[in-house]
Each structure stands twice: as structure tokens, then as C-alpha cells.
Length: 193
Image 1: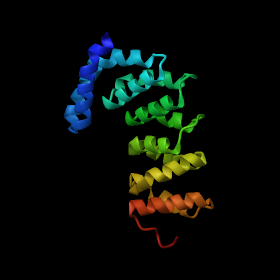
Image 2: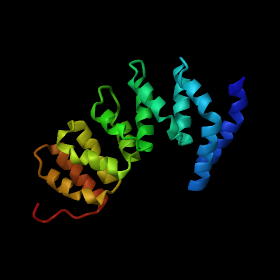
Image 3: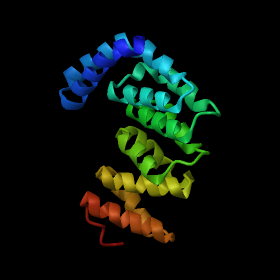
Image 4: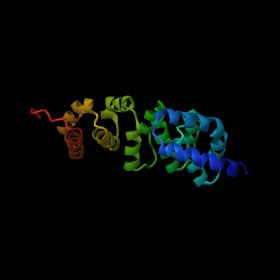
């Protein structure tokens, strides 16, 4: 019965959150959701049905409920958590600028599509991306590709020295992606290359 009681205000808050772009309004909606929906969402995250758990994760995203981060970490670490849930949790942690996101992504041992990884990286703030760039050579090739694509997509001009270095790298796919990132950023390649 509680689910039916909370459904209408939840949908109303979701609609406001999706339509209104003012940061003050979003903060107020997030505060209302924190006060009135936290217990409901935490209960939904414990349900056996996958769809209920996923819907709860989407509500956390819609209402920017970063206070649930510890619960998200616990769910992420469980062996029974599905790839879809782990992908959504990574996206949420990236959105909340959580420090553990870097560790989780570097140690990925399950299948997440390149598209999902690109979406997660696109959600990150530049300081998190800087930390990936700092350890670029230690990353698996797949993450290097995603990082190069993210630099181009987000037009992170301050990483053009990395792209210039990669244009000379022996791996053909890295060179192609680096050139594409240069084109997206709009910074000319240094003539000495």
C-alpha cells in the first residue's frame, strides 16, 4: 500500500526534475526526495525482482540522491549484482564524483559495453578524468580507447599533449582515436608531428 501511496508524488517529483533545469529547484527536489523517498528506495533496492531494483537505481539518478552512496557500494560489491545494476551504480558514483569510481573502473572484471563505459566517463568531472590520464599507460587498452574518446567528446583541451603523444604510438587504433579526438577538440596538431 505504501508503494501506491508514494507513487503519485514520486511521479510528480520525477516530472519536475526532468522538466526544470534550475539548479536551486533540483536541489529542493533532491532534498524532498531524500526526506520522503529514501526508505522506499532502500527497500526497493533489496527486492528480489530485478526490475524493482533497477527502477530504484533510476530514481536515485533522477533525484540525485547521493546520500545513498554507501548502500550503492555495498550492492556493487555483491556477487549476485547483475551487470546492468553494476553499470548503473558506476554511472551514479561517477555522477556523485565518488572517489571509489576510479578503483572500481580500473578493476572491472565483468562485461560492461563500451557505450556504457563512455557514458560513465562522460558523467565524470574533469578531476577524475585527470586521474585516469595520469595513469594512462597502466590502463587496459579498452579503457585507454574510452578515455581518448571521452577527451574528444568532452573537448578537454588541456589533454592535447597526451593526444599528441598518442598520435605517434605504434598501436593503430590508439592513433585513429587520438586523431578523432583532436578533430572533436578543434586544437591543431603540432607541426613537428
